[in-house]
Image (tube, rainbow, N blue to C red; front, side, top):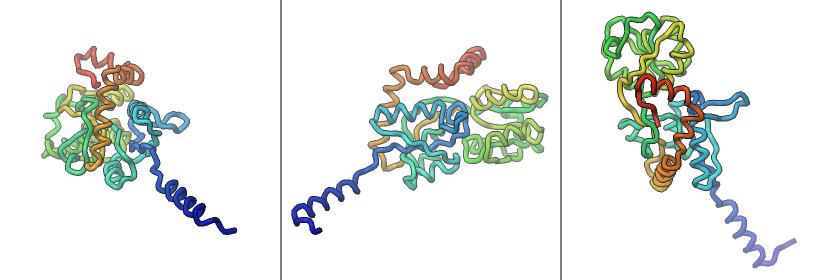
Length: 259
């Protein structure tokens, strides 16, 4: 059966409009292997500080959120290729990364710390830069960048997973693991019989949301959300929900907390 010409034209316009309609989903990249910030719960669903933050951002923008689980070293390539819209994955804003992506205003301040063996003579970062020392780092992190820049005599061992790096220290194959304070705190607690956490930061870092260089509009929206979320106590609630024990311990040690 043939459609009348006017009806046929209208149908074509309607189809074109539907097919060209843009999906409003906000696709957020995370490496879901870093509790309590971004991880998977017992049922395999994303959970953690970054997950709650992403969902609050989506709600503020009126957009459904989909989280893509991507290894950390693949997050920036995924962002640049437009597989994802932004990165919320405990990513440090660095000059090197700013050469290829943009960042929001910082939402968290932290620093690098050291996990060392229980009976290790290492007390500070200065003790690491010696012949015969092995320092393990996670590939693609600022811990790796710092170690390669600062430790000229030690051997640098780069591994993909945090758990692998911790095991190197636990089993005595590495003298120290250089990573962020929160992870070092957690791993020191989990392996208290074999390791020590040296939490005084060896440098300061700021975490921020990663965006494409040409996505200024979304960056402006993210910055507005972060400002409002902080003013409304959103970050305090995240800290109380996921990091209450850590907050108390850091306060007792006199070390500034993150948010």
